[in-house]
Length: 306
Image (cartoon, rainbow, N blue to C red; front, side, top):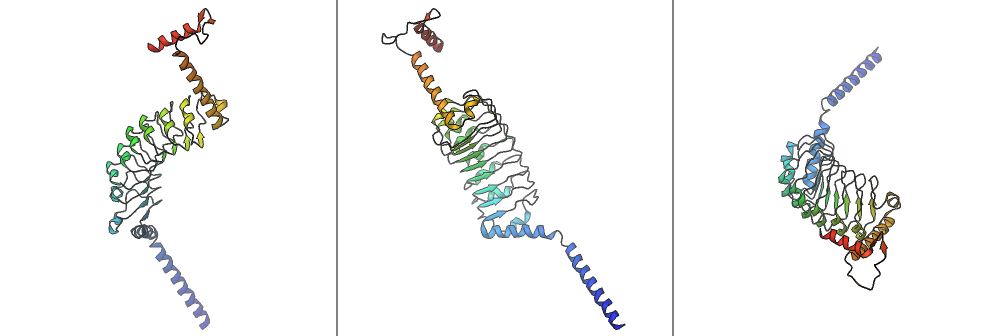
């Protein structure tokens, strides 16, 4: 009938239209990523914020040369597959923040020194075995190099006089450089999960507010750390601590500092006794196993001279 023919024709047209639409979708399945990438580059040219996070990038987009990115102040290239820091990034001289978290980066090029506006660098969760000296020539306030393969920090780290936060946790660092005491602006230091056996005394002169050296091999907290009057957070668990003893460390910062103060007082008294002049004002003649205290002090003095 005419009605039946009309229904069949309508059904056929609908089916054809649906197939056309599906065909069109199938042919553009790879467009959203490209469109998103181009949109991100376009937005960066307009806003100064380049967001290329989580795009499976192995290299910097070649089409970026079509956009003016010279005014970019913040760049997020985290969670990609980069094996190098793209050379294009080192040309963005206005860059203040660079996030390279969670890539496969094995080295930092010397050309990064051209980023003389860079105050925040996140190079965490990569494959760095060396933190080059060129990084210490940047005006950094925040440096995150955690979760890499670092076994040392550069001696030139003391040049980072503006650095307020340093995170080198989860590496293989065996000792902190002596020049770390020159970081006079440092507020937060995280060396969690490394291979440290000794804490440098120079840290006592820094205005640290947060200090995390948990999960290392430290047995002694230097007595001079009692001078860290601004310290609010101290993380030290999972160390073979003997001084202060573990039972004191478990009670918290106040008890730790009391212990260090007592040790300092005891140390000062011992030092004074060793260099005490011979005088009748003190009674030092009481025998100790056949020797007077004065004789013992003289023996210590001889040992010190040797």
